[in-house]
Image (cartoon, rainbow, N blue to C red; front, side, top):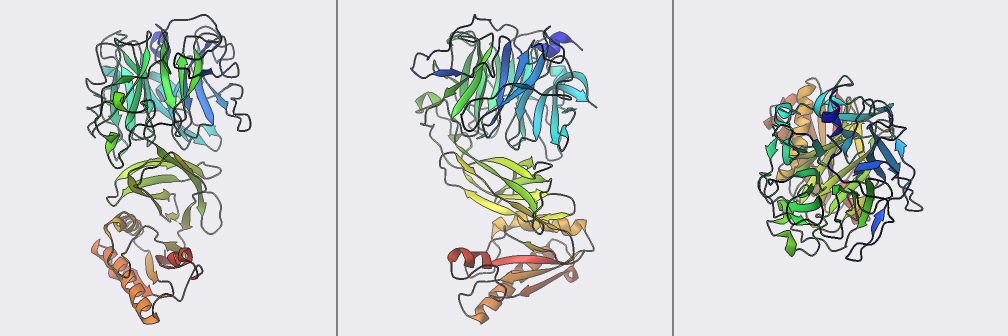
Length: 540
């Protein structure tokens, strides 16, 4: 293994080493808080990576005697947990095999569900091959050996002394910092996109608003998917490297607002890099080499409650110069949703892949994975869209759910959102929660398409399966009207399946009116639950 190539992939060797001092307020009066000796030490702590829920902090520790390869320049991944009662970080713990197998190890980002980690270097069958990136996934027995990501032409393009990366919250975007010039220290930021088949595109430069003749490195894309933070030594900074922020103004990823220096609230007159935020956006975490307890230390900064102007439904909130915003340090707010994937009959947890799509177009907005033991999941959703969510697991059919986030608010954390699944057995009833009708009508609305197309795929994959579509109403109105409306809606779903090529004799339809309520009809909430369409598996 090339020690220089791997060591400098995470640690920038030009960072100055300052002498120890007590942390003090910055010039704006806002206190920069050193995380203390539970996290920081006499050694270098770099690359902080905060979990989206803000409860776990991962970082790299350099030359610590407990590292896999000891004190001679080794670098391992460590983590600390937040004590909810005291609000203090617990003692640093070194992550074990297989994540700290080699001499120079680094974790760049973790998905919102906490199940996938982006790792420095390309690994194949647990063995380091070359510079690049790998993914490690959480299993019932721990973390899996890292497996390389195939980024076309990356090894040929990345010729400089350093490289690093970051994966977006939706798992669809990989940001990378490297140089195409041999042995150069002047990195630029590139992007690669995950395709529908799981492959990745060739790295593409972000454009001249972001990249300059100086160094741009340690990229971090906020959970809103549009706000980019990075470290640069460009002219006009406060120190040797400062943190900057800009916003993506369109979907090409080539056009960005003018980067703005975050100022003395975040930056020092030394070296500052590795900026990161939790989903709530309350605190920024970064590595600084000024006023530290040892060498490089991890600090956090409490951010203002004032946010940049948010424009729901527009990528990046437009192309305004961020210097005119009330607080450039914070991205647009998002929603952190958590819950469990469970069997609707037994209540037992299920390990599943979770897919979320925008409505009405059904565009995949991202995916997550539930915990293999508990079934717990977490996803982050930006405002400005309606979404549908479903779980995917072998021998089960998803019971979808939906959420309307078209109206932007502040950061929200929504807990306890169960994603239920029905076993593929005869007699299983699957509610169709993501099909929509106008009041009193039986015409399917456009946003019903993603749910119904998913079921068409299931029926095509299981050519012997037959089903009965059932329509239900509440008890308002006459029996005659309710019976007809429920039958018409069941027929509409059946006709949709037939229009997609499913044989008519595999699909029956029945309107049951108000005869099979699943909740009280005395409340609007109960009546809404009773107005439903579902299907029953008649034959596997």
